[in-house]
Structure formats: C-alpha cells, structure tokens
Image (cartoon, rainbow, N blue to C red; front, side, top):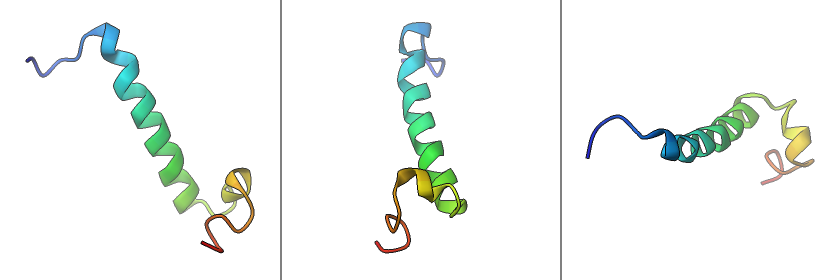
Length: 44
C-alpha cells in the first residue's frame, strides 16, 4: 500500500474530510448551527 491515494479513491477521503470539516465548522461556528437545526448543538 502506498501513501499516495489513487484518483479513483480521491473522492473517498474528500467526502470524509468534507463531512468532518462541516461538523467542525458547525462546532466552532454557533451561527452556522442554524443550518443543522435549532437547539441541535445548543440543546443537545
């Protein structure tokens, strides 16, 4: 297995990274939490 990921699998890490980034952004950005849902992050 090589450290470099093939272009075919390029979408795999990208999708995961995008989802993770969105989650982190929503966490650090309470204002953006509105998109996910009211009280979703605040209420818990």
